[in-house]
Image 1 (cartoon, rainbow, N blue to C red):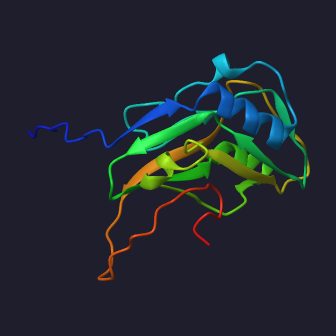
Image 2 (tube, rainbow, N blue to C red):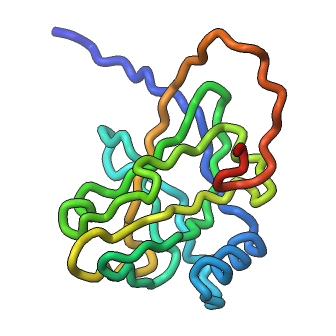
Amino acid sequence: MFVILNLFMSVAVFEKVSEKQFMNDLKELLDLQEDCYELIRIPRRATRGSAGYDFCCPVDLTVKAHESIRIPTGIRCKMEEGYVLQLYPRSSLGFKYHLCLLNTVGIIDSDYYHADNEGHIIAGLINDGDKDLFLKAGDRFVQGVFLKYETAEEEETAAERHGGFGSTD
């Protein structure tokens, strides 16, 4: 007989970005102005054994076949240094629609929380399939997995993050 100990500990917390930030990004990225801030749901795991936290679509939208889209999630993540949040499309959407993240895997660094856009997590997706994908507000579409990482021997990095996508180039 053996005993399973609960060794899981929290390394992060999800929060909503401000309504102003969300609405600005929603208008800019999807050209939508509908009042849907209250529909944003904090990511959750589907089961105790799930590694991924499901992100829900905040609005009704269509990802047309062979087209890409950037979806503002309304979510930011405050995590301990030494951890990264990796985003992946939900496997069912990958199989059915060939849905992929534009950069293959989304990398959310711990210092992104302090970016000028409040650390707003935005999912860039492409529908590489032959049929349109219809997402309703509340549908799970990407999942985030926390991973601990190590660093190489290097000089001390003093640069600070300010922007979002491509801000460290």
